[in-house]
Amino acid sequence: VAVTLENSANLLAQSEVRSLLGQQYTILSAQQGVSGQFDAVALNYLFLGTGLSYQPTGVTLSVGRNGTSFASVAQTPNERAVAAAADALAAGNPVYESLLGSGTAGEARQAFRQLSGQIHADIASALVNDSRYLR
Image: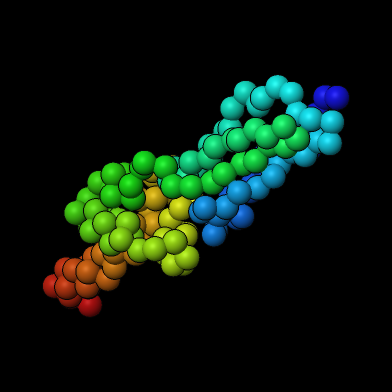
């Protein structure tokens, strides 16, 4: 028996990433047994790792953190501070879970910048600079 995934080869959409840590999903079950293996699991998430385990009658997908820390992709001091704080949070925390959904380092850095509050200092600085112009 051959198995073909129809419509999409993606088992999990990015919107479904939240609270996946530590979860195991039976993705294939066959009473007559499973032979062969998947070529690979395509990772679409920067901070998550997956693994497949094969049993005689099924295949299970496990989801967990990979070795990439939030802080390892940060570039500025503010990003690093936010990322380090987020690394200390636990699974289930909304900020932590949201960051897990980052697909690229750029997406993660954008989230760090939004969380840093730097925009408030930038706006205040711009207002001070604008105040020297006559109106």
